[in-house]
Structures are given as C-alpha cells and as structure tokens.
Image (cartoon, rainbow, N blue to C red; front, side, top):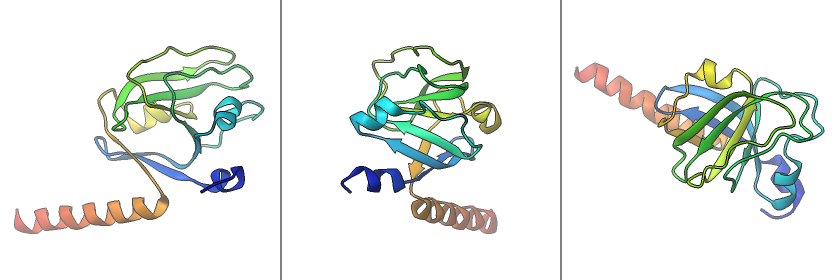
Length: 147
C-alpha cells in the first residue's frame, strides 16, 4: 500500500490473547514519519473503540493532544513491556529501548481489558481477527467434547 490515503484507510483490531479481551476494534497505524508526527494532535477526543498504533516507536509525547490517553508499549512480538494509564496532556512519555511500537488508546482501556505487562497482543485486520476467533472457538469446543 502506498500513499497516505491507503494508510488512513487501514484499520486493525487489538486483542489481548493472554486475558482473552478486546482492547480496540478500530486502531489506525501511524507508520510514516508524518503520521507519527501528527499522532492525536488536533483531535478533541478518542471514541471508545479508536486508537493509534505508533510504529516504530520507543516512546511518545502528548504535546498538542487535548485529552488523556492510555499507553501500551510493545516489543517486536507484541508483548506488553510497559503500561501507562491516563497519560496526561502536553507530556513526554518514557523511552523504552526494547520497545518496537506504542498503542495510544482511550483512557480506561488498560483497566477494562485487564491488560498487564507480559501479556501477548494480537494486532491484525478484522478478517484475520474473525479467523483467529473461529479457530479458537473450534479448539475450545473440541477440548470440551473430549474432556
């Protein structure tokens, strides 16, 4: 995919495989220099199902962001390495050298999903998420039938 129009149309689902809980169904990648620079600046709020996936990133700032957000720092395998709940406006977040990307999500997302350091997240397209959930449902039903 090339061009900013294609990038802005991409959406990802974020699922905590460890806790079996959804974090978001509508995360937009910020994977270009311009998209990372803009981030959430100028937005008035994030809807409950929205977020931004900043990559690559070892830390973020909220300069120009008008509301608090939850931050989830991830390594290259999408394992949670650091969490910050309700990160305030006009601040610079900590740098984590082993961080590959950062999820910027609405406040209370970490709390409501029970996400913790060490959890493994699945970040994928809605179609991939649907396949993953169907496969896991089949596995669970097979275990229940044989157990």
